[in-house]
Length: 140
Image (cartoon, rainbow, N blue to C red):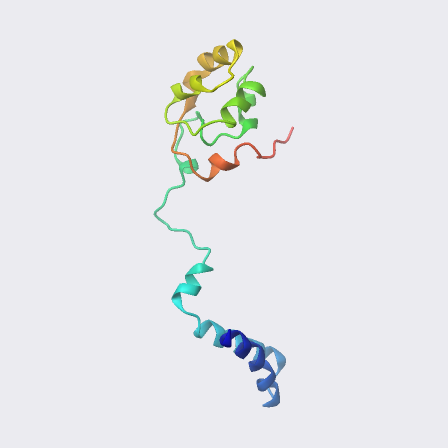
């Protein structure tokens, strides 16, 4: 709390010494950055770890990843969209392609579509895309 009050008072004090408003503000920012602890700085950091691979970035060899494919991506497979695709996107995570047959409430037609396109599916570990796959915008 003391650092914040100093950051607000510093430009006012700097103005009384004849500095421009811009120099005073930059001085306050520099002071604030210099007095910030590493823990606080890391809490606001947006940097990503260079060595972590997001599952959605893993190669799928042209197949649809059941844990990352957006509902609209199933339009490529005739008969899958919207019902069967919605069932896949509303359930999971999946650990193998065969897991889709355990989705509750499947119709015989859904199972038929899954069997028809089973070779078009793959499964990568669920990541951020797993949570976003239902609400992705689909342009028509």
